[in-house]
Length: 409
Image (cartoon, rainbow, N blue to C red):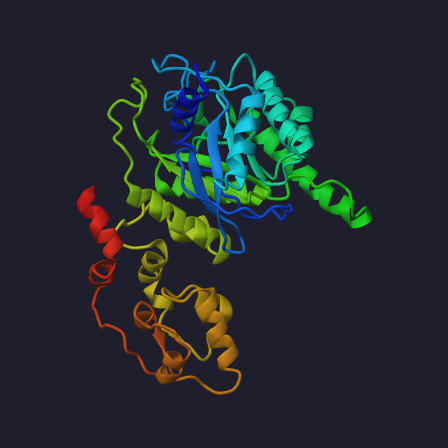
């Protein structure tokens, strides 16, 4: 099989893995090349807002595991291909020199054993770093079940590492991926967390000590493959952020690409549901919300018509309206339509004088979504409705993205 055919097969096989963000790394890029669009190249965003491109590819789609949701499962009848570590390294450098990419996202099926697969991934990283002196961004997948020493060795070579949790409960993982376990996944996650903490302390003493995973670790959950509700998914995400200091949890909507008795009757997950989970994830990470505030056992699924913050505010309408001149920063952050930027503008401006609606306009603060939840100098300009459901109907009609997606699904 020639290299072009391998590229076609192994870039296509990598498309279902979404956890390839590049934020957080400060490894120096000596040449500073840009990015372009190419088959097998994904675009990600750094923390400073730059859009950068990564070669997204599998080392191989051969796999000894038989996961019931994966297109590369052992029993699936697909064309198999495999790169050598040298081929991946050469591809990365050649694409980089041609200004196609600024980094590499490399995952792999598990061939022979987890340790053997990790050794091949490490060989790719060593070739890039030591032979080619490549200082670009590298994100690789750690293999559950691989030894701690191998994971630690890879962590010293790459910028970010992912260990996918795959499914939101241990029961669903054991059912759909019986060769994997939460123990295999959580143990290396914990080791990575501890090593990251140790590395920070070491670099305080020895400033030139090598960096370990400067962009941290991430993981991915599949949404909809095992019928868990949205509350279960965001509870698991909250636990991952708390226990393992995850940089990001990514969500991949379930697409039935293989036939299995365990997923029979489960349809493709809508893009809108995935979108609402990402919005809830943002609330967990940056807005101080807890999972059981966003959803509860009585209402374990998102109302797809509304973003989770709007839905929470309407469900807790008794907490509103808030007076804009007295509300704390934390309270302002919970008002629909007011994020960190608007909240800081309000806090800073009202130090000099009480604000009115004209002042909000001067500060370029839109009241389109927040007017139903605030007063300004005691003045309320929101909609007067008798029920929460009526307000939901009105606000959902103002979300064109949700309306369009609901038509599709």
